[in-house]
Image (cartoon, rainbow, N blue to C red):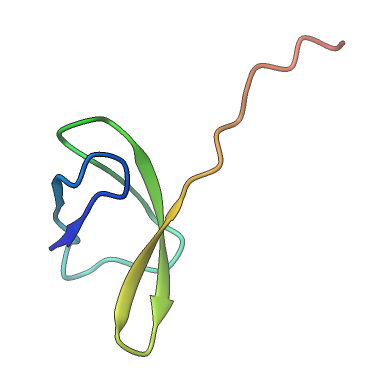
Length: 55
């Protein structure tokens, strides 16, 4: 369990989580990428990919 950087809500990290997975805050909907560290996982704000309309 860790805290959301956006709203300070609780985010549950599954026991079988892998580095690079995306988790979403159930309270505000913010998305975070799991980054593996020696102490466990840290949350990094996930990159959002916008629509590319060929412009």
